[in-house]
Image 1: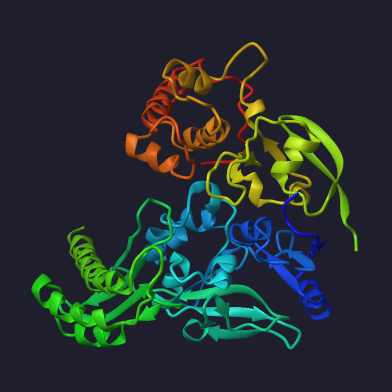
Image 2: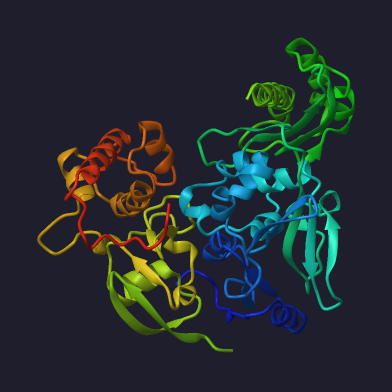
Length: 291
Length: 173
């Protein structure tokens, strides 16, 4: 028996869940369990109450609405991986999700769990930043929406109150034919990335970038949008020599030291990975136009 | 404070109704309460893959689930892979014939993982097999013979009549 003692609740509706969150002290929400369960087994967390979301109805869906894809908080990573809608509208997320853990963990792990756990190098977190996602939250004061840019408030801490839960997220999609790439560096397949990057670009007929989104994961507590690089790319053609100059500025992005890599190593990766991703994204645009 | 719950689960085709403390993991429930010790526990925090079971046909780490969460679900453990007590599953035969195991500790998790993997991808490349078992650690084999055994099993399972009728797998892909 590894986890510490707790009371177990398995509500069936979001309202009941909100009610439990409002009335219980020291409660933890259990989604896919791929992060909370290890923490319980190792007794890093000692909740008095575990509220299991797995039987809450209506939190698992992937649907298109108003130029965006809405994904429910309890949608399994596996369902994102095999969704035709995601593959068509969010090829970036399709590429990223295959690098999330392993088959056994994607079968259980959820979108909401990943966003709320907010591991600095989690692929879905980096995608949410790259795609300007909006996070849907329910609480006793009713539902609200949080721009993803304002969602991480500190290391592994989302901007939700103790009596709120994430019910889903909305991911606006880019026009068909855009370029994308998710590139990460990790020591083994399935490990958390040391640094990852999510890149999206649009180009005009002459091959000049008209819009760019460049995000770095794993550098610090939250994903970093490289807004200066995004601006510098507009009007440029994707070409290696010029990209080297533009991406060199990413060496200035603040980075953490840890047992996996020193900050300087992360900063080196920050100059290299986006360049590779941008070239890949550009090649995909070129290939798409040939077809 | 309700510390125990009664759950109904089907494991390897047998239905069990059991009362279990809510904080017990599915892995410990399977081993200690049901006595099915084929499911092994290595790391107990979701890294090694030895405790992999199939939940409604999908692989999952049983150390990362509570037993109460399995209420109403269908579970396959390594004991349920072979069609009967005398016959091995073609996957198990391939592991025996190709030295796909040495100490055998990781084998239950590798086999359950591969049951799902080969069902979804009957004709995998070596690279796909390596990614498929990347969530399972083995400290003996260096993986080489596991990969060979998995590819051999895929071949055997593609041959008509090799696949046992009792194959447990309820979901697509």
